[in-house]
Image (cartoon, rainbow, N blue to C red; front, side):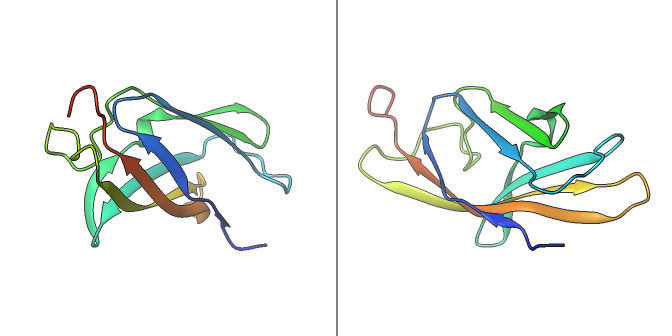
Length: 115
Protein backbone atom coordinates (compact mmCIF):
# COMPACT_ATOMS: atom_id res chain seq x y z
CA UNK A 1 0.00 0.00 0.00
CA UNK A 2 1.36 3.40 -0.99
CA UNK A 3 1.55 6.35 1.38
CA UNK A 4 -0.90 9.24 1.23
CA UNK A 5 -1.04 11.57 -1.74
CA UNK A 6 0.12 15.14 -1.29
CA UNK A 7 -1.57 18.28 -2.59
CA UNK A 8 -1.58 21.92 -1.59
CA UNK A 9 -5.11 23.28 -1.97
CA UNK A 10 -5.60 26.98 -2.74
CA UNK A 11 -8.76 28.51 -1.26
CA UNK A 12 -10.10 31.99 -1.76
CA UNK A 13 -11.79 32.84 1.56
CA UNK A 14 -15.55 32.95 1.19
CA UNK A 15 -15.69 30.75 -1.93
CA UNK A 16 -17.02 27.22 -1.98
CA UNK A 17 -14.20 24.68 -1.90
CA UNK A 18 -14.84 21.82 -4.33
CA UNK A 19 -12.50 19.00 -5.34
CA UNK A 20 -12.46 15.25 -5.92
CA UNK A 21 -10.02 12.62 -4.76
CA UNK A 22 -9.53 9.51 -6.85
CA UNK A 23 -7.99 6.49 -5.13
CA UNK A 24 -5.72 4.64 -7.56
CA UNK A 25 -5.94 1.19 -6.05
CA UNK A 26 -9.15 -0.80 -5.78
CA UNK A 27 -10.71 -0.12 -2.38
CA UNK A 28 -14.22 -1.05 -1.30
CA UNK A 29 -15.23 2.10 0.59
CA UNK A 30 -18.57 0.72 1.74
CA UNK A 31 -19.06 1.69 5.37
CA UNK A 32 -15.87 3.76 5.58
CA UNK A 33 -15.98 6.94 7.67
CA UNK A 34 -14.10 10.03 6.40
CA UNK A 35 -12.13 12.40 8.59
CA UNK A 36 -11.07 15.70 6.99
CA UNK A 37 -9.43 18.08 9.45
CA UNK A 38 -7.63 21.40 9.11
CA UNK A 39 -5.04 22.43 11.69
CA UNK A 40 -2.69 25.32 12.35
CA UNK A 41 0.31 24.83 14.64
CA UNK A 42 -1.23 21.51 15.69
CA UNK A 43 -4.51 23.07 16.82
CA UNK A 44 -7.76 21.93 15.22
CA UNK A 45 -9.39 24.86 13.41
CA UNK A 46 -11.95 23.02 11.25
CA UNK A 47 -13.41 19.55 10.97
CA UNK A 48 -14.91 19.24 7.49
CA UNK A 49 -15.64 15.51 7.63
CA UNK A 50 -19.34 16.08 7.01
CA UNK A 51 -18.51 17.57 3.59
CA UNK A 52 -16.85 14.40 2.25
CA UNK A 53 -18.95 11.96 0.22
CA UNK A 54 -18.19 8.69 -1.52
CA UNK A 55 -19.79 9.30 -4.92
CA UNK A 56 -18.38 6.43 -6.97
CA UNK A 57 -16.07 3.49 -6.42
CA UNK A 58 -12.68 4.90 -5.48
CA UNK A 59 -13.87 8.53 -5.66
CA UNK A 60 -14.41 11.01 -2.85
CA UNK A 61 -16.08 14.37 -3.52
CA UNK A 62 -15.46 17.24 -1.14
CA UNK A 63 -17.72 20.31 -1.19
CA UNK A 64 -17.20 22.76 1.67
CA UNK A 65 -19.76 25.61 1.56
CA UNK A 66 -18.61 29.18 0.97
CA UNK A 67 -16.97 31.05 3.83
CA UNK A 68 -15.43 27.98 5.44
CA UNK A 69 -13.71 30.21 8.06
CA UNK A 70 -10.74 27.88 8.67
CA UNK A 71 -9.28 30.08 11.41
CA UNK A 72 -12.51 29.96 13.42
CA UNK A 73 -12.63 33.72 14.05
CA UNK A 74 -15.79 34.36 12.08
CA UNK A 75 -13.85 36.97 10.09
CA UNK A 76 -11.85 36.55 6.90
CA UNK A 77 -8.06 36.83 7.11
CA UNK A 78 -6.61 40.21 6.15
CA UNK A 79 -6.92 40.54 2.36
CA UNK A 80 -3.20 41.01 1.65
CA UNK A 81 -2.08 38.08 3.77
CA UNK A 82 -2.23 34.36 3.06
CA UNK A 83 -2.98 31.92 5.84
CA UNK A 84 -1.49 28.43 5.63
CA UNK A 85 -2.99 25.42 7.35
CA UNK A 86 -2.20 21.71 7.43
CA UNK A 87 -4.87 19.21 6.48
CA UNK A 88 -5.32 15.53 5.98
CA UNK A 89 -8.09 13.31 4.71
CA UNK A 90 -8.43 9.88 6.29
CA UNK A 91 -10.77 6.93 5.88
CA UNK A 92 -11.59 4.54 8.70
CA UNK A 93 -12.87 1.11 7.66
CA UNK A 94 -15.71 -0.64 9.47
CA UNK A 95 -13.00 -2.84 11.08
CA UNK A 96 -11.28 0.28 12.50
CA UNK A 97 -8.33 0.45 10.09
CA UNK A 98 -7.30 4.08 9.50
CA UNK A 99 -5.74 5.12 6.20
CA UNK A 100 -4.58 8.62 5.30
CA UNK A 101 -5.58 9.24 1.68
CA UNK A 102 -4.38 12.81 1.15
CA UNK A 103 -2.42 15.45 3.07
CA UNK A 104 -0.94 18.87 2.41
CA UNK A 105 -1.45 22.55 3.02
CA UNK A 106 -4.62 24.57 2.70
CA UNK A 107 -3.53 28.00 1.45
CA UNK A 108 -6.20 30.60 2.15
CA UNK A 109 -6.19 33.98 0.41
CA UNK A 110 -8.08 36.79 2.10
CA UNK A 111 -11.39 38.01 0.70
CA UNK A 112 -11.03 41.58 -0.58
CA UNK A 113 -14.80 42.19 -0.89
CA UNK A 114 -15.52 41.35 2.75
CA UNK A 115 -12.09 42.15 4.25
